[in-house]
Length: 283
Image (cartoon, rainbow, N blue to C red):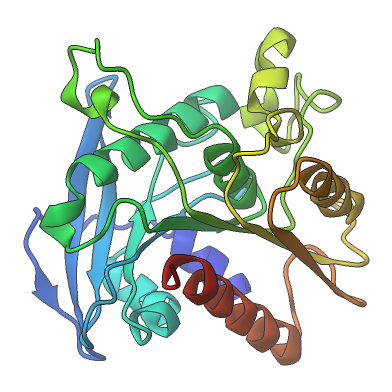
């Protein structure tokens, strides 16, 4: 997990401009696809395409830890994407406007726009927009749940073509996610992204957004997580059940915030891949 977090947060001065590049371990990468702009800056994601036959499904990965989202060279992320690529999935590593400058509502707005952009351009990436999944860790898990619980078909009256597109998600996997921000919104030295108007906390708390039309959602959490208590996942799992949403939860005994043992990492990676295979590749 430490290596994954380093990969997600590593900043680099080298930039690639929208050109597909070959990866040594198979597949290709389209780096720095611009899905929007804010404050004079580009919002980007990378597209990892499998070397095996693509299965037509796409998986969005939320590059977010503490709602910090920094650029890293695509080759650092390829080993992380490889298990999904080996199964034929196309993987999108999505970055959002980062804390501390941007707060949670703005981070969520960014990744929702990215979802619409991918829907709009799905054919360009060989992806069926109705087979789009999302996953993330911690803050990335929170954003994944927000996308799953707030999907819509777009605004046909919008002047921006991206905003006309759907933001619907077909499957979600969330690792140790915060689910209710109401009690933690406000000044926060460790997580400045939480310092926003408390009146907005309901709108970015996935626990409060659950409804019967939500996509199948898998939750994974450590039993002794002292940052995001396991109750976060068990609570939203119960809410999904109440709303008859397809859901499951895996609790890793003795694991904290981030799975440190090889066994937990292997089991969670397998569970993630199998969840997406089950819910994105079967009719």
